[in-house]
Amino acid sequence: MKMEDRLVFEIDGRLFGLSTSVVDSVIEVERVFFLPGRKGIVNGVVSFKGDPVTVVDARMALTGGGNKNRALPQRIIVVREKNRSIGLDIGTLQAYCLMAGEQGAGAKPVEDINWIGLFNEAQNILSS
Image 1 (cartoon, rainbow, N blue to C red):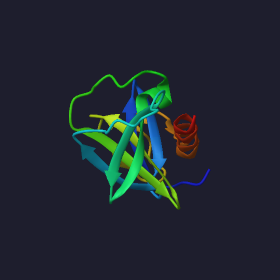
Image 2 (image 1 turned 120 degrees about the vertical axis):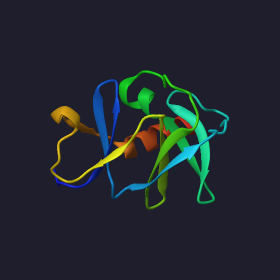
Image 3 (image 1 turned 90 degrees about the vertical axis):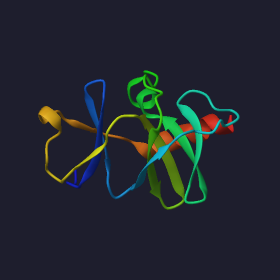
Image 4 (image 1 turned 90 degrees about the horizontal axis):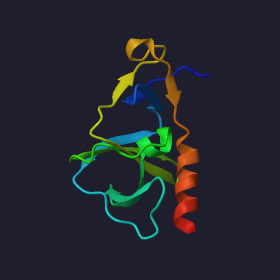
């Protein structure tokens, strides 16, 4: 596996990370807009740079549990590559950058997020 900088956040004692090369931005929103047909991991949609971005509940998608903290504002990690984009709703959790080769908090392993898999799953949910 290639060493690269990662944006990392912790859910239920587990560290999850994304390559910073695909992270477009971390935004705070007061509202994730309802999306007809949303279910499962899909929370809704936000507007980012004038484009709609489907938002998934990171806690549900990565650990199977629902988002425990619905306090506002919600933090959304916008991931984008070519014509694909998705938002990961991390609630009020903090995200931080780990430089290539750095260990996570308490030397916990960082689990890489398969965001393309989440993108495809969200697309399947919305098209059914």
